[in-house]
Structures are given as C-alpha cells and as structure tokens.
Image (cartoon, rainbow, N blue to C red; front, side, top):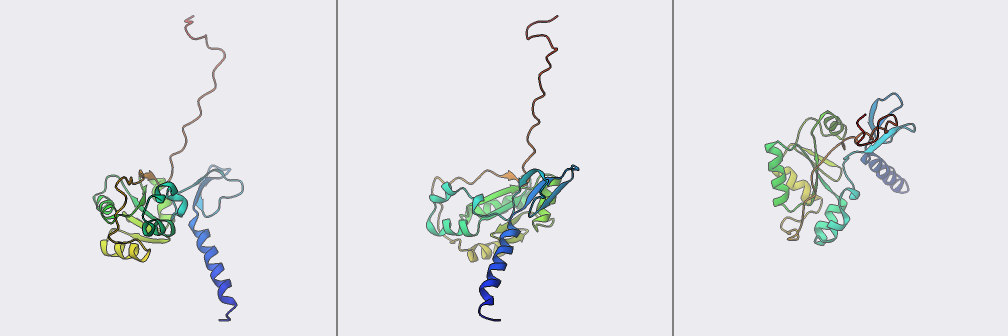
Length: 195
C-alpha cells in the first residue's frame, strides 16, 4: 500500500465507524416505522435510539468525579448493558459490572420495538448483551466480558467513588409521548353549571 493511502484509508474507516454508530427510528409519510443510520428527509417523529453508544450517553458530570483511568475508559469505550428487568442472567450481568466497578448505561429490552431495534444494533436474540465501545458481546460470559473491559482500559481493582450512582435503566426505544390533550369544546356548559 502506498504510504499516502494509509491516512486516507484510516479516515474512511473512521468515518464509516462513526456513521455506523448512529441509529435512528422514524415514521415516514405513510406511517411506516423505519430504523437506520440516517433518517429520511421527510421523516417524522425522529428519535435517536440506544445505539452502540458514544460519550454523549455517559453523564459527563458523573464522569468528572471518577478516577482518571475509569473516566478515560468510560469516555472512549462506553459500556452499555442490554437487558430485561425480569431475567436472572441479566441480574448476574448487572452484579458482575457493579463488582467490576464499571460505570455502565443500561438499556431495557421490553417490547417488540426494543427487540427490533436491538437486532438492528447487532444484538441478535440473546440477552444480556454488553457493548464496549463498538464491540457487542452477546450472552453473559464473565471471562469474555472481563477481557473486553480490560482491553478497553477499564482497570480491574480501582473502586468507584463512595457516592457513585449507576444510571437508571431506560428502554432501548423511548416510549411515544402521551397524546396531546383534546381541545376544549366551547358548546359545553361552564364548570359548575349543570343545565
């Protein structure tokens, strides 16, 4: 390979990796729900879904109080647990991450939309799953998860601050907003008037 081609190849690969990170859900003019890297120009109700996350997923204020090594790993290779609330292997995975002092984000796979979005992220049908940066680990296996976290730079025996609070688990696909209240009907009698 020509030496000048290496930087260009690196930039192309990096741009492709960044584009692959973003995942969106939207509705088209016909009411069809779609998922992808880029919403259509005529898309409505565009939502960014829990993709293989980037630094924006991790609360920067919370990271500020972490030891440098953990803060750097969490920023560069955020850990996202994909789980279900009533799932014993998911409970084991949560306990593992907490015992390992990993500041992770949790996305719940609760309904059909979550399952579809999870599959599009490369999660297949297996939970728990863990993404560490762009790497997706399917099913809990302590050795593989430990190796991925160590490769990402998460230290093995460095404690989190005493007051550390893990983020609350949220659905992978946010629930739709509640419907807007109906407009008041002017023909109804005023309040208190029972004609």
